[in-house]
Image: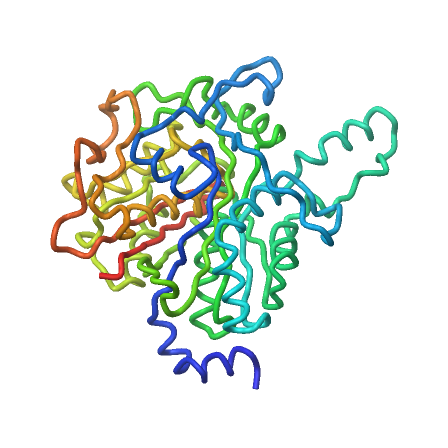
Length: 419
């Protein structure tokens, strides 16, 4: 009997599993808002942009605002290969250590072969190898310290699986800014198909000169803090982050939030520009609603992709208007607080949605949309959250988190409180 067949047998069959939620543990997270879940939650509700700092270290001859993880990174574990040591993996380790007891307990409960790892990244650890490319240019040879495996897209999942001692499937997803949202979708699919009994899922991306220079060449970087959906928006602000969940079929250690449904589309409109009408984004959201068995009216808050670029914000406004007519749902972009964390953005923003849904923060108002308040008259008006708005009383708290990427790659996640 295959592992998938055995998992299906032990959990009531594939069809039964296909209708189940993916229960999400208390997450581990590091980003510009802080180095713990409590710090990130505090900054989220305060609208704290202090972690977004101007720097001239990333783009030659130019200052831009970036969101870096300012705290010290964890010591490198003994016994792991030197080529695995990178800032990207250390951010990942910082997030993993926050939830290490839950991860170790999952291994003990299910067995190493039944615990998988799926992560998203876009740059892996390219920046850590940048000096080697300079040496190659200047000397014609690679330095002895260069190891391609450090920047391979597989590096995060290989590292985390080895550190944890899991022996289930380990995979890295790289679909630009939807990478870690798709990692959560993949984790949910593995549970439904009986491939795994628990999956460590999320993503990590560290700041990278190559990436910032690339966005600069596209004219997409703002010199000041990003200003999503404003008439004065000038582009994105980049951040770094790592965010991790343990996802299981049943809630463990008092788990109270689940991934109820997800949707994806790929409209392949343009290499770097979104399909202007928002058709692909709308399709992803509609698919997520169908999978969750919900209607648009069931959504209480939307964490928008909201990058602050002219084309993304216009497209997303149209998609939101089509799905939620008459400004039908409170929503916000959180990228002025964290920066756009690229391959980690989907998981990071799922963490922010998780915070709003968990009982610990249920009494708090919805996070405010941080911008200059200058609405763009050419865009459909959205109901940006703020001024004490809350989830509707008497209804299950449900949030949608959207991520959209180059190549018309779109995702939408729906997370819900237990009741």
